[in-house]
Image (cartoon, rainbow, N blue to C red; front, top):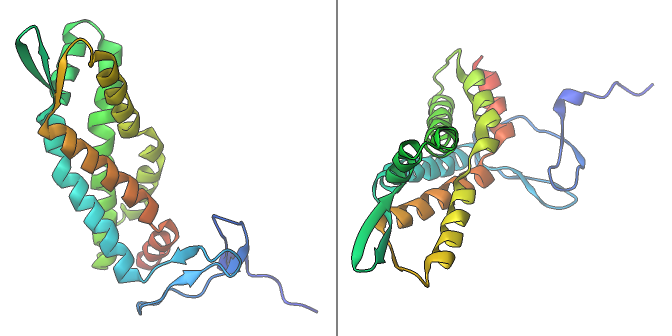
Length: 207
């Protein structure tokens, strides 16, 4: 009589949905791939976490310049004005668009910083094997708010605004825009590189 299937050791490939039996997490350098589509399921533990930390530190380094420094310089009828994300948020509240201002503040200012802070907390704890009762909660919170970031939508709005204003005003990119683009790229790369299964398994080992 065949033995019962141990479903706890199975995982579905995110690309082709093939059920794969997982091997125990090892600290040595290894790469786990799907045998059907060759999608990388797990990277070496240390190397994978270091890549995540690199993206997080880059994002945190670019966050404050992206939010505080001028994004664009508008020149119209000889008058030049520099606009930053903070100026835009202030303008929304001054003009009475409080609801929109609250949404922008939460989705653009709060969520990206909270995401990076939560993930940095989790990754540093599992990397240095420091146990904490808040590890699972922090990683669940990160996964919950990941879908609420709007950095890519904001960049698209910048492009649309620049196209509409190019005939009426002279536009020049500010330092904040370059920092914002790097922040967006670091955030997107971090999401792609993050090995959630590995992080969950490392959290379970520390509980």
